[in-house]
Length: 191
Image (cartoon, rainbow, N blue to C red; front, side):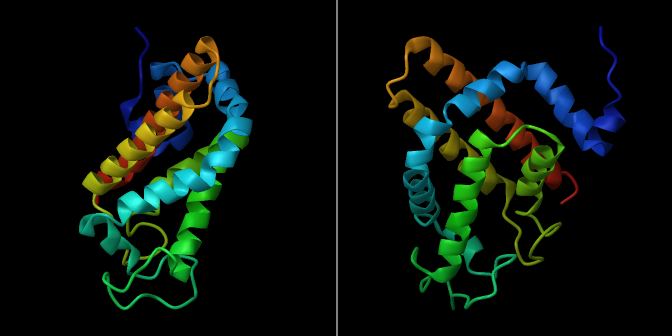
């Protein structure tokens, strides 16, 4: 039986990511499958981004989090939830961030910089990073991750990949999104 320092899991990001990766079996072949999907997924990133924002804007519980100023955005902010539209400059700013995130998943090496980026994705949805006004409840983050996971699965199933490549790609993204979800939920423990 492998002994795990559980306190280190909470204190050391690289140790935590390594542990979760090892536990669920995420390795180089998964990274290769994810990177191998880049050419297929890149053309559909704008469609995925729009689908995510269509979903986020269809519920008051998620749309309301786009009214406060977003970290890094310096333009006009919407007056209220009713006046916020998807073509608002701040939403376009946010869509660009999501597009870059999806692109990074399929193109960047899974090194220390990527690990810090994935962790920051979780942190930025809490007052611990970015805007102190932004505090997206964990239930909304879990709902979003479930939606993104399903959208990626549907997209991958529609790519026309051979059965083996499709299975490897689906499994790799499934593992990756579970690890991303861990790096989101960890920032809610003391929230």
